[in-house]
Image (cartoon, rainbow, N blue to C red; front, side):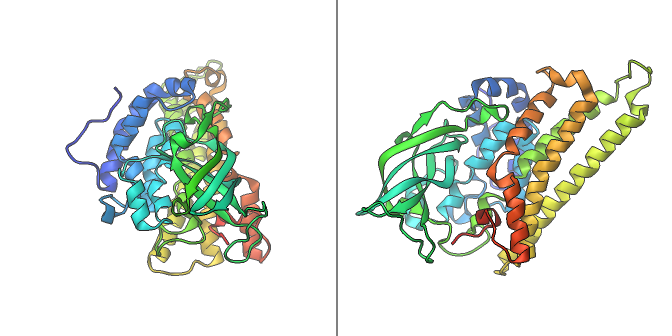
Length: 398
């Protein structure tokens, strides 16, 4: 059994959870090949992640949780990503349970999420259809990218509301469609073995489907209608800790190459790498780029958290700052690992090198809808008064 050292009490602070995450890093590195080959997180790895407290990070103190802010959540994910990116990705997705709960009636959420370490997976985008029936919806659809769906307790599925006649129901604000998200036990869905990918292979991000599944109305929600207010009750709360994964991956790659470079000698010149201009420049530029990317991520998160905690309405520039920092973190991390991969040359291509897996993982991450060019278009459109193509990436839901 892979496990961090158990204690008599669950972790209830950022320091405790970060410490446990750090203790798990060497174990995740040892298990990285196993995780990738399994194309999902093995049960013992899931159990070890639960023990770190990562899945309870956002649970409110009133519910007996640590209620970590978005900055500390990101730090935990970043630490885990230095061990294994698939495990960190699943942790980042799986800890959204209390964030989804904040959009449900509290009595319903407490009834559903009885364990603070419960894991939620699934795609929130409205690719399903939910026919409105008395008491709820009949849900049908097939959702891709269900990261962690193989080990989740609950699964979400985004859908558009249809009437009995099949017509789309307008949103409460008068929009052309009503986007809602259903939450149901994992065994309510059929998981399909579709996750055969270049990177993030261990995340188990399979497709899953439902056919005419009844979901009570109280177990569905809209990001446009939070219950209460606060920095955790905004649509983009589930996006804030995402940069922790690429930042941690880049850190792991840099640490690996720096460790090798100390004792490496250039075969052609017999000159130590530590005295080689090309190597020195590559390492320095990578550290410079990673430092700038981290500063942008954490600086923008801290500013956003400060404003939201004070009840302020974010300006367009303040809203966009975290979005641009997020996209930049993914772009910069892949660039760093690509340059290190080239620096190490043929050493990089063999599976024992973590650079091979890290580059593949980051290439796959960069295809995520929240890191694509349409997000930059949306940010630019918001700043210029245009029409964002992906308003949700900006935390805007109507």
